[in-house]
Amino acid sequence: MIIDERRFKRYSKMKKTFCVILGFVMILSLASSIMAIAPAFNIRLAQKNPADWSVVEGGSGNAILSHGDRVKGIIRKMEPNTKYTLIYYGYGANNDVWPYATCISNTTTNKHGSARFLTKNFDYSGFVTDGNSDATNKQKFWVILSSDVDCENHMMTAWNPTEYLFEQKTI
Image (cartoon, rainbow, N blue to C red; front, side, top):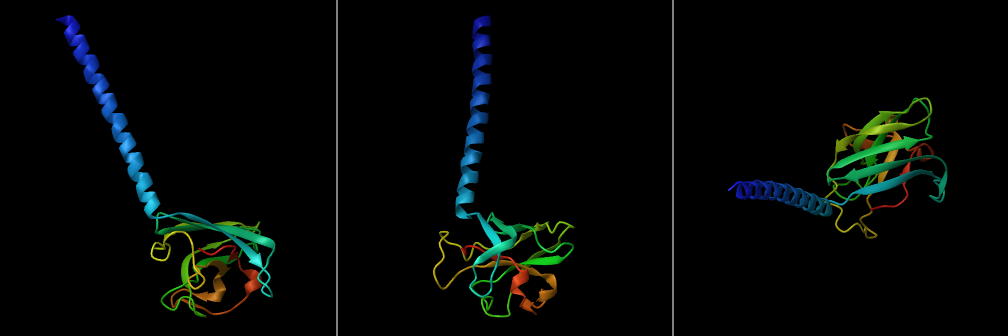
């Protein structure tokens, strides 16, 4: 009788462990399925020569898109103690026509010209399908001087491209 009770307890313990492991595997597979629906992007940003749009030595950064509705950023080697705004300048709702722009986040650089943009909600899932953009719908993310944009009215108020960071590749 004692042997049967021990077997039963071991069996129950093994069953619980198996269920916990199976649940964990299911959660991981569900999370990867959700991530497949909303691709993530790390968009490299750089200063460019406005004469030919080639990348020049200087400031750089990244715009990081995740979960289909979140954007954050980081910038380096920009003007110290300066306010910058991460904007979306892309396809749809007049947003691809000068001077329209969508402000995402803003920050102020430190004494070394570096800063992080806080994560903000920005639904990019509607314009990204398979990660490839065609010639007419190129999505652009820029870092511009905060003084050059009116975020309330979604408009750029000045154009100083030598002071900005532009995407190195559109999505």
